[in-house]
Length: 391
Ligand SMILES: [Fe+2]
Image 1: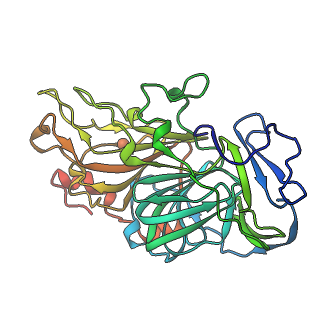
Image 2: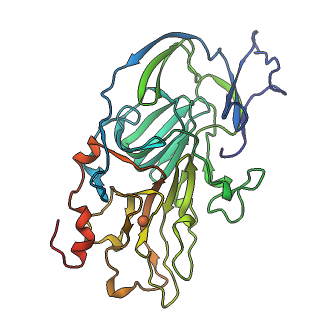
Image 3: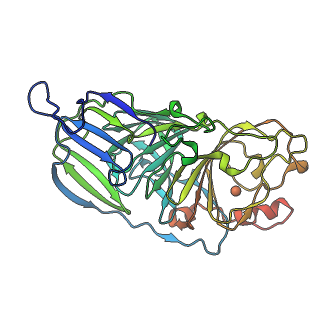
């Protein structure tokens, strides 16, 4: 649900005949969420979008997971992951529960056509650029972009010249702007840290494609390859609120204060069972007596995942956390800065931080891929900053 867009040619009313100039009629497709009782788009295809030629299973190794046991904070070094394939089949799941799977991918190749039949995806571009192709039109994305792709929408990832590395967030439901940012009618409120004009959707229809098309379909971790008689990228027009869009983390307007602001001011999106937050460069707390950072804090009801995407996290100095690090602080775990130098930071200076946080309300399991790149000394990193020799 970004906002309503219209592109190309449409009939005056839905479910009315829409003749082609050379005879015959265009095929309407209704793309609707929640039993067609919520956000939707109408798309108009040159050819019927329903004809399936064949379908087959795509065999994949099952994802091995393990409980976070003993229950400790974790540091996963994504810089040691090199999947080297495409954004869809090359992604490496790291943390997962029944609501969301968080992974990482390094990609240099174009993906096949793909749709996620389980839920929306949010792909955060950590490095590089790509074109996200879909029937709604191409969308150019680059470092710092969140790319939200609604469930069911067939798309293809085409990396730019230098490839693309991304954080992958796969939901079992819909990923939306927080409801509290919106008016009753769905317009962004003045207090929201971003607006409609910050959301980038496709700006032109796709180049029409003809012929059969294979589409990889994922549902609950199982992949299928479905061959359609007609390529799905053949639209002459569409309108609605369901389409892929991008939002740059650099367009998130930080909310700062005289003393420390709580984590919800960073919230960017929400999905069933999780929230997604952005930590961006911003002015530090400006009261002369401000401590200048978060207190030690206990996230009572959520597992807290932080992906360090840029800048300099001085507060975690000595912990081993660096660019590309992913930390997991499990629910009920008291954590915070390693140790503030001289008791506090200078007031009112720019904090050069860039991070994506995912808080999940159900515990996350670790995959074997996560354990393979884990820093086992992370659990004692706070103790080390107080002179402890563990680790
Ligand atoms: Fe935290």
